Image (cartoon, rainbow, N blue to C red; front, top):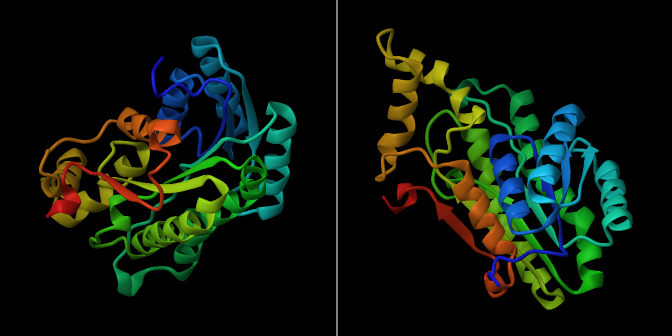
Length: 265
């Protein structure tokens, strides 16, 4: 039997219909985990949940919510416990981005990014915490970013929020250890999702009229990655699945870079 066997376990995935969130759900499903999908678009979730159930034979349920609303997260966590029997894993895969020079960064965008990227991780983790403590076991995996380790231009709010996620990961890992709860952060480099593609126009504008959006993305991201290739979302999903397995029971409080060597520079 594979050490990545997650049968008879239940995973909550926030941002479940995003590029990385979808890949995480698929990899967890391959390992046999039932999945509770958390996101703001219930129609997309319903379609994706049916696909997961049909392809992998697992149980799925969808829960529409905004990760900034603590009462909704607590309520949905109780629903998962009632409907699945417990919560084994939480993977916080939600996130938003906005590019702007620091001096011009809109304050409302700064607040929004922190509310989603950092506060949302805090609130989701807090919602599942008592259920994991009661069972004396749990896995929390926070999808941070290489920008939780290093910095770059135009992303001050995102970088600050992801550094916060890494700090929160370490703090909660210390408190979770006595309860059998591990908490880790996954720090991807450039993953070619919609979140990255949406940055193309702004980078192209900065580089000049003869630079295409794809060329601009390549320069902005791949020039910083020694491997010179975008990371496939499935790679993030596979790492998250491993961190949920018993094989990773001694890994906690870690910020694990999966960045093609970006942070090694």
